Length: 148
Ligand code: CA2
Image (cartoon, rainbow, N blue to C red; front, side, top):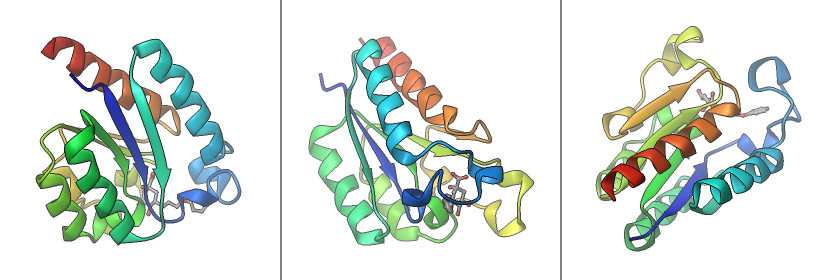
């Protein structure tokens, strides 16, 4: 059985660590990817890690994951709050879906309180900073281990 986890990052997350450290911290996305790779090795997960500013590219990766991945960890960025298309793509994926936000979206502007992606996600994490990615991977490994 596949233990491939595809970690997907949406728009503007390429700027992580370069602006707004008070909200998103000082780690870059490359730092987050490196930490995820180390942890994935420990958890015996295979990892793909991508970022795009383009909605269609995220959708294409979700479609590709249908054939290859056991789980998707997704920080859809602002598409969280707008994209029915990403929700539809995730609804066509049979594996585990974890929605991961660096900031606590519920403590922020009201337009960040609603998530289309949460309608599909098996778990949601928010407000744990970039540590949320590691916690998401741990949850995926736990669920895959439980499936046997
Ligand atoms: O908290 C999160 O992870 C978000 O998904 C981040 C999105 C935001 O639109 C969501 O409401 C919550 C924004 C990502 C932008 O990332 C930046 C990082 C550093 C500097 C500028 C943008």
